[in-house]
Length: 234
Image (cartoon, rainbow, N blue to C red):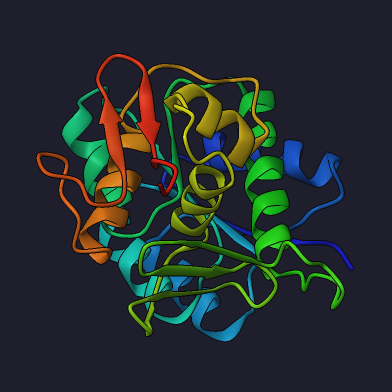
């Protein structure tokens, strides 16, 4: 069955172009020019990924992102015509997984869509029962990669797939510094890496859920100018 992709952009030529490229990749596309129609679709269809324009005339893309995130953990990619980091960070804060700045290359967007779907499917696919590498731990963090559960001092944490992936990578590479670029490429399997705040924002949210801080880290240490690191236990 084809993955179901929701697209909303009030510029028909952009929405139509995205639809054309995604249909050429055999995705099932649900295209809308208004947020209200897109929201109705999202509430009645089990979509696999959403591509949302931020600047919409009826409901903002931010609001649409938040409402979709309330009922679904599917990947969300925001489209923005602005270069300002504030707009991008706002989308990530509300639950978006990635963003693409207009004007964009259609093939780049297709690559982002595929990368997000691969990550999402990996996150939601059960591991084999005999996988001895299911449990990753550090101090009072316990990560179960088979059930995709994370606990802090025995209390379950509600992590997004991206946050879970970042924590898993850092736990598997304890003692080593992992750069933002490495995290980006490992999670999204994406050749279109550019220096931006995507990883920084996700790490900040992860720290908040772990009751951690960048200034006095207990779990995730920032190695300035290099990346992030979880120390090996002595």
